[in-house]
Image 1 (cartoon, rainbow, N blue to C red):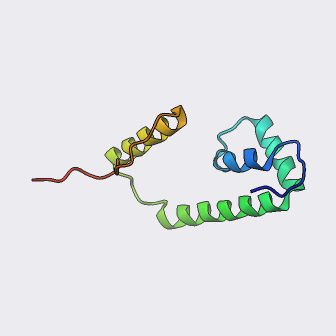
Image 2 (cartoon, rainbow, N blue to C red; image 1 turned 90 degrees about the horizontal axis):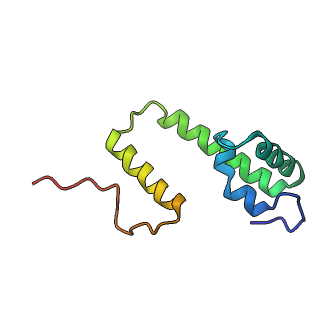
Image 3 (cartoon, rainbow, N blue to C red; image 1 turned 60 degrees about the vertical axis):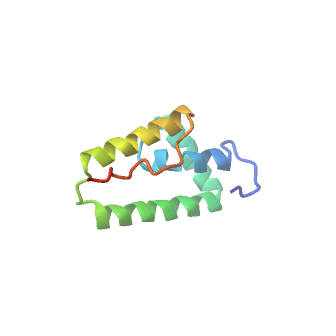
Length: 100
């Protein structure tokens, strides 16, 4: 997605790192760049607002549920694989083994 206008920070960079911004997982200097971009770019601001609303809704509806430790470990392992650029297996890594 791009608004077609030139920006100091490209729309694709903003959208690729939107959840890092939402989760406050990026340096302050990058946050400032994103805030400036949102002031200039209404499509990205709209996408930010939508993702922020979804995040709040999920937190409100599911925020009290405990996540099983093994599921959390599997999901974090998959995230680590994706971040490292490794190929992620197509089979369902989160599936629990069948009990006999």
